[in-house]
Length: 125
Image (cartoon, rainbow, N blue to C red; front, side):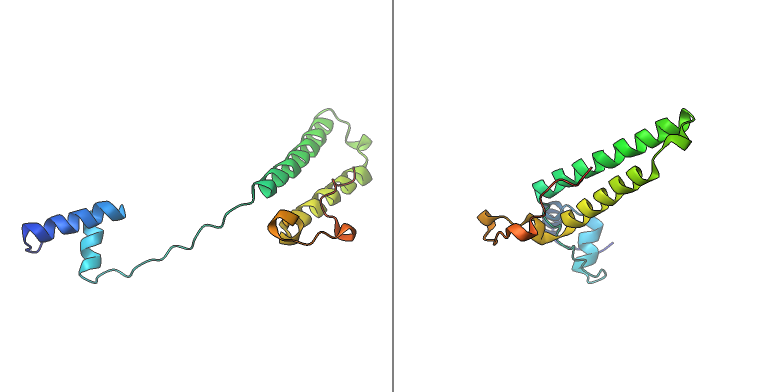
């Protein structure tokens, strides 16, 4: 508890309301009892990247569902491991391409388009 004038109290309360913090936190900060925390800015996500990762995740879920259904039906011996491996490798490659910033550069953003490094092709299935 400490003493302050009504004007000082209203200024502290207004500062607490404006900052979205609690009254006690603002008062501790005013007294120098708390170190200021700086939040790192949240990076903006490219909507096209988010969609592509969603598509890749959907493909992965389809493979998992297919494997689970085959296992439950007792058809484990019928599963072609090479086909499953090839599709998983395709998903891994697609994820790697999606993680590369250059893959999402477009001419509208001032990027150079090079046909020899076209990474927007769908993965082979």
